[in-house]
Image (cartoon, rainbow, N blue to C red; front, side, top):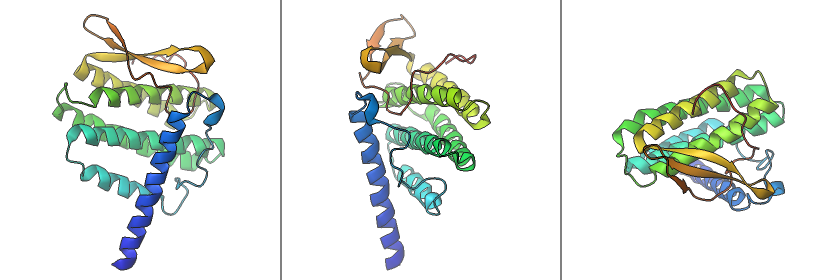
Length: 219
């Protein structure tokens, strides 16, 4: 039991470090050279024997988050981690491990979609989670362009569009991507009822990637 507790503590520290590193990339996202698909090379990725335990710890964290909106935010954040892992594996030409991360991304989005009807449309944090999904699409579009004919990426992009649409039905808002100077990308929240546009968070994309290309699927 002591050994098991020690392993759990080590994994929690590792997961915390990964989250902090992702937040650091978000803070420094205004510098195009500060974020790279090969960041966190030593992170526990799909090819690591401890990867399954890492994902299990994330799921456990979600299970013990009793606020529905906060749980959805964590699910979306963990889905973001799967994209980052898939990107690293693709950059290393490890398609098998990238496919594993993308499969888990799909599963996490399904969990989020299942939980969405239970949440009030006015819940704090719901709009932020929707914006994160919109940001996923920017990176997935870029990865689709860089790695064409990858069915996992194609499905992940389509799934993110579908989930964002579900969020939009809930919040009556959608996010539009706006390219600004210095390669920055911001997202504008648009009210579906009256078309009024609001600045969302003003943050740049939280994941590595350039502006997404148009796809046939509607967001």
